[in-house]
Length: 295
Image (cartoon, rainbow, N blue to C red):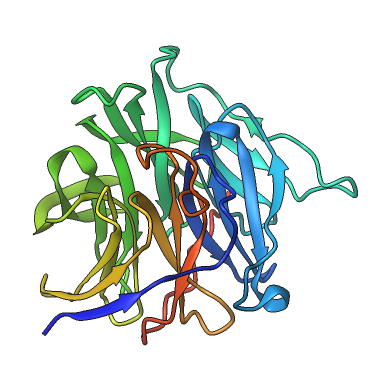
């Protein structure tokens, strides 16, 4: 039987296109991005509690696609045309990201979503700005700073997260309408197998996360929901989100038991006080501590 949960609005509408939530254990904050404004958004879950929370905003560049904590401090980020590093803010809270080498020159291609692997590499995928089929790729930034292209012919590279035992990754190319399982040789690095996990119905699969029991949670762009699939691929939980375009989700908080969901104003029919807010629920499972970038 499929369980239903209703997510509650946890912040004002703060993002034009919110994406990429991640719990930062060391800082005690939930971080996400307002992608096209190039802003890092943080909510202090240790202080702000469950009521409408204060969102702190830091501008870091022309576009901020994705980010993950960096083991030595700061963040690793996906920018317009490649990867970058972002230091802890100074006393004024400012400071832009430092781009690494550009991976392409075409201004109609940009980074989108990503995540880290158990070996400390950061994966981030690209897409055409108009969503054209097959123009994106999935790239991995190794701890030593080298970059490998892991998948080509991608349409809209989205969620990527590893299973609890680190043996496989769950990956979304939104253009395919489903979630795939990647078997990865991290020593090479190389993807040795790719197979379909689930076909997603009720919306377009977007960002995802994996809980400590191996369940896969995916936001449904245009579907006003987040789905949880059990490790065998059965849909067992639907989280209803009171706006049309959820983008991604993460399990966060001191106990990793709060599901936080980012949303977008894009496609939602304009600002209505709900689109672009962060949403929250207690799903009854715990998450995994986010894997950091070790470079």
